[in-house]
Image 1 (cartoon, one colour):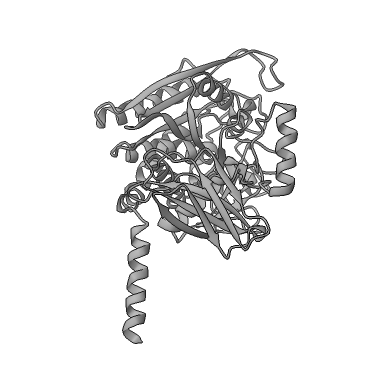
Image 2 (cartoon, rainbow, N blue to C red):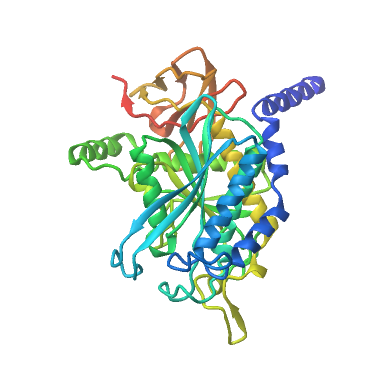
Length: 448
């Protein structure tokens, strides 16, 4: 009996090990806290990076900041034999577009593309914001170092590029600094439209906005928990008839919390718990913080999967504040408030998520389900090029994450015997030769 237990234990270890890729652990270890610290310091030292600030100076303003960011991506590209395509993506926003655009401004994003070897037109994107602000959103001359909001996200994107550019992936990865976030999400709008116009197949967008604070204004200090914000279903449902049909289907078959962005959030959760189990990813069933917005939203608006990754506990004395001391409280988003070990962890969360998705085959386009009035659930899906096998997932209808799975090979349909279809939600992911999985596809057809 004892030998049997030992064998089962070792067998479980082998199974678990087979589901992980050693290079993902190497990627976690390669993220540099020191480089993140240097990059945040450089960005904060530009004084202000307000969208409407100086573009001529080489030492102050958003123009100097974006030129420096581009130079960093260029240097990374040189180090990997020019593996990155680095360019500016420009968007003219005219005065009066909203109350925060008080003059015409060229909103400039800095983009670095690492092309995939097999799917060069499929992209996983990590974004950080270039711009910063103080209390008055239209004050573009006062010091606005924006150390945590959002030099940390921008530094994270550059650091992820340094590490992931040492590897080759089947899918493409984009590292991008987006501008105009504080004035109305203009950088994201411009790049999302650019992606649509150029027929980019976007796997997902990881928007990093504030990934460096562990001391919340609520008194909580937490260096392990982070939030993943995701909308429940895509908002790109412009056809009224299609919208009504989808709503009717969700009423009877579910799917209210199973849109593509929610699947991306679950993927981040699962990847983190697999490779960084010390971290505590917190799924938040909301597009963003209450009444606020981030640069994943413009991508969601055009039907792309996108989520926001950020710290769990915010300190509002350090966000959107004039630098001052008032009633003994030091206000302002300054360098000394950033926790870089935490920033390193969240940068690693992004890097391993992108590496995993960039190594995976496409997700199934069509997944059908049936099994009404049977003690079973039958699923069918389309064959996916490059997939060695498929993972059938199911979970309780009240569970936020995929909790159960069954791996299969060389088939495109399977019946889960004894799994009552009424009591669970289901999905299917493609699996590569080395075990990397695509996003889960929620059933979009009914088997009759």
